[in-house]
Amino acid sequence: MNSVATKSRATDRVWEFESVVDALAAANLESVPGRSSRFGRYALPSRKAVESVVAELRAALFPAYFGARGLSDGWIRSYVGQRLNNVLPDLQEQVRRGLLFVGAFGEADGGVYERHAAEVTRELAFRLPEIRTLLGRDAQAAYDGDPAATSADEAVFCYPGVTAITHHRIAHELYQLGVPLIPRMIAELAHSATGIDIHPGAKIGSRFFIDHGTGVVIGETSVLGARVRIYQGVTLGAKRFPTDENGRSIKGIPRHPIVEDDVTIYAGATILGRITIGRGSSIGGNVWLTHGVPPGSRISQAQPRDDLFDGGGGI
Image 1 (tube, rainbow, N blue to C red):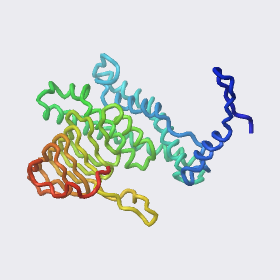
Image 2: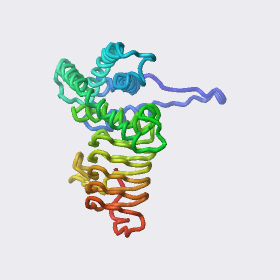
Image 3: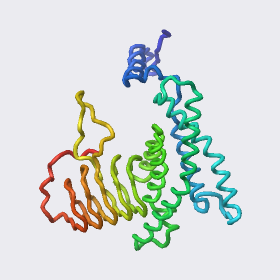
Image 4: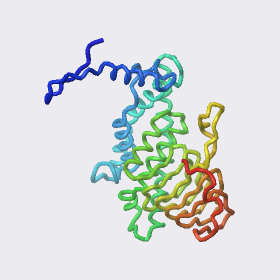
């Protein structure tokens, strides 16, 4: 091994770092079981590329908002086609990288990964019109639900909740298609930009509205119906994490709330566990809730909170 050293200009003292380099290299090869055989062979998806993909998809979904200026009705179709032609190959490449890095098809030849990435990308493209329909309804819900909003256009341009749900609806479809890494990267881009943390596995119905939004957390197995409205600081989390015989958390089991249609959850409320919030209910600000409530319930902080210290607050 070549000697690894740096020299301090102030003292002319040489620092030998061979043992540090050896330890860090070993840690990166051994810290994740099974990964070392693939480490260095396949590039991870690029955060910068994924961010660009989302921006391009957003421009294709809302060309009059995030696309070129001065688009006429006759040019929108051409513009959308151009955006998709630009972005879909980039998305396919990032999907391929994700599949390869996790070894989705073992040691199959690269053509298998390439073909599957192409199939996933094609399927997402066909789902974009439905995503656009849902996002249009989300924007309208923001306008209808916020007396300060002057138009649905303002919601699309300015509201962090609409930004977060746009990312989520793209990420969720990729999650449903079994794409590794990319959906979570898209979710974290929205989280960084808005302070809203929605796991791509969460199922969210039509006309969803997050008002203000900062600090909202929606866990992986949450299920939200239509016309749900939530405010800043709301957590839809897990009450506890079942573990296997080795003490590891069991993945993928339903552990987050089911929120039925027409529910409103006010600022700071925490709802934990696989419980059901019945249709048309209203959950007041700062309520801590670990048991289901029937349709039409009105839950406020002033009511008894018997389960206040029952279970954890994980997501």
